[in-house]
Amino acid sequence: MKKLKIVLWVIVLGFVAIIFLSNKDYLLAKQVLQINLLYGEPFHATELPNAIFFLVFFLSGFLIAYFISLSVRFKSKKTIKNLKAVATSQLKEIAVLKKEVESLQSGSSGHNAEAKEPS
Image (cartoon, rainbow, N blue to C red; front, side, top):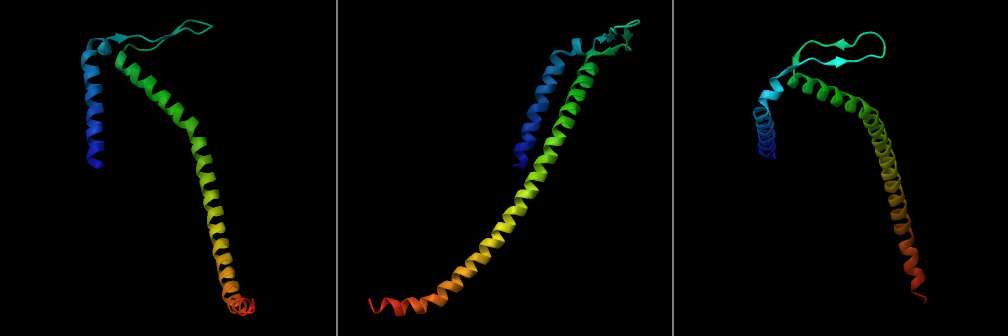
């Protein structure tokens, strides 16, 4: 399984390298990011390569998605913890009930044998 992961990562990185190399001229071309605000003059960022803009926007989207899913993961962990506690308590209750049934069966087995003979 470990070797499969390594092979898959090499394939993914190979595809990324192919995409980067085939679009190298565009990704290394420098552009200015301009944000036109409703008031005042537009904001101009420094001139950066397109690859930097792609990385910045990809990472910001990744972080936004991570923080949005963080609360869901905490809720899931809490639910799993509660369900595990319920399952262990029910397993303990099942063990107690099995012991009780066994004690009733062992105590009544001799009584049932006597009751079955007269029939």
